Image (tube, rainbow, N blue to C red; front, side, top):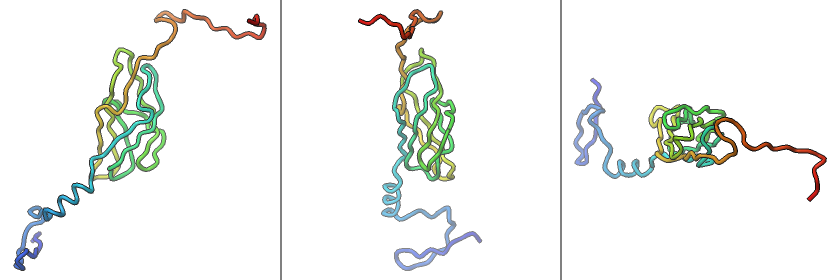
Length: 148
């Protein structure tokens, strides 16, 4: 009939549906404490705009190994997965959109598949030589340089 027989605190027994059962208050608190929210860290925590960057993503609190990583909703290429760690290629970003980026980590498991951190990585504008039309500085290496 889809019902379970449950013993009550006073010793009485009752048939109930599984969806109407809930854990004892002490068990619920212990389960909530044991299952802390997932934490995501990215190393390095910042990188330059305009180029893809290899980084390591570490995520605690997921049920399975990392399967996907998204940075501001854009997929990062997963290069290698070792349990709760993944080596990824973070997507490049236009210099005009430098700043903090949210990182979303997804796992294979079915219970808790996702962890999102609002500012796990920061893109910055890198300083460099030249402008949009090309290099303004020419670097030359030679063996007959004048000493001094």
